[in-house]
Length: 281
Ligand SMILES: NC(=O)c1ccc[n+]([C@@H]2O[C@H](COP(=O)([O-])OP(=O)(O)OC[C@H]3O[C@@H](n4cnc5c(N)ncnc54)[C@H](OP(=O)(O)O)[C@@H]3O)[C@@H](O)[C@H]2O)c1
Image (spheres, rainbow, N blue to C red):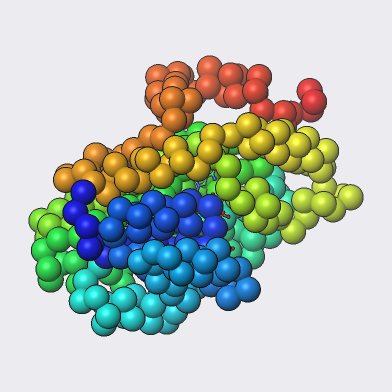
């Protein structure tokens, strides 16, 4: 792996972003890691004290903030070799319990945030005839479940964006790929935003959402450590060219292939056995 390459990671003050910033900086990359809330930037600043990590203030929901942050990196380094489009979060709730604002907020960050960053870095990558964009998708892109429908919808959108962008930019020497992790231990559960009516006493789905919450918390307690994801990111950064997509864990591969191979009715029946959302619970 070449050192002295410049990597921009969004959402680098926590979870995947923070772990990848550390791993890449330890391997000689110059890592620009974004944070949006100075009060939550402590872990990133700590990392920056001993490694070539440079914190950048950026809210991926705001075009001006994205352009300013990317502009700063380009002014200082003259290039961005790799963009790791990582910032994202989960809105949880049955669709009927989500307000329009909930859904818009979910798409604003997870989809439009990814596009804002791509638009901001592509002109310089095309001019240089090289660059790589790695989008952090999710296995949820291929397997929607109740409660996480909005999140799955955003990650399906990221999947389509990646597919098209990969073909669109190849001629200019820009490589675009996606990583689709399943559950991995980060702050994603703590940072999950509940839909407006999820806790409402009048919600017909309340009991099911709560049982799903308990189920998800339990699953995440036993989820794989973040190192699994870091290994996959390192592989994607080092591959020339990249694969079309990277799956992270053995269970993710099983799920991915089961979804492709199973007829829809069988898939729904199998999910119903695993996920506690129906009136049976
Ligand atoms: N953990 C998993 O099991 C899993 C599985 C599949 C995919 N993913 C995806 O992996 C990515 C990273 O998640 P994570 O698990 O590492 O969760 P995390 O620990 O909650 O980290 C999410 C990061 O995104 C940042 N972020 C959220 N909204 C932002 C915005 N508008 N502007 C800038 N930064 C923003 C957060 O900043 P704040 O700290 O300020 O909120 C945080 O730094 C997400 O795209 C997530 O969907 C995670």
